[in-house]
Picture 1 (cartoon, rainbow, N blue to C red):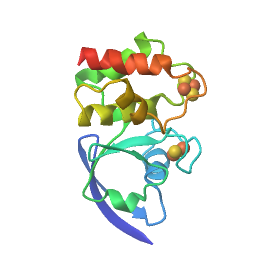
Picture 2 (cartoon, rainbow, N blue to C red):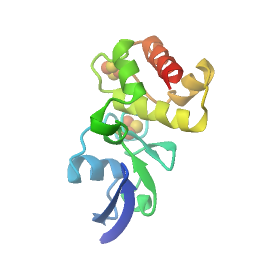
Picture 3 (cartoon, helix red, strand yellow):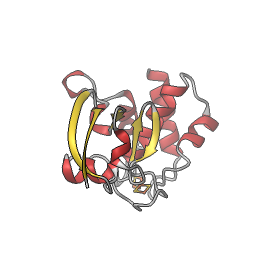
Length: 155
Ligand code: FES
Ligand code: FES
């Protein structure tokens, strides 16, 4: 059954007709064609689909799209600055060599983004906790933690 929802997506008001069984991930990727948010496992285990909803990191593959009604959603497409300047986290991931295949990267960055919303000066334990639900098959995580620390210093 279709319902109308209204919410904020990357700073813009969105009104859409959605099916009640759709996930937010399906809506982002297949309806809006925002392909930055990745689908890995599809059941809450890998974090590739992480977006930020009302400042909290959320697995969009498990989040019913109906529930974004009235909320503020941010995806990897929405964090760059004016003129599409890279966000400090995006720059740091590139500069610290934290991107290999890149499949986990949008989710990692959105988890780190939510961490920075919560804590201005997170330590390594905070960072590890923030990304514990984000799997990376390539980097071994050290460079990802370095990148998040570098972004923190650059903020
Ligand atoms: S695709 Fe959502 S947690 Fe893996
Ligand atoms: S860079 Fe390949 S999965 Fe993380």
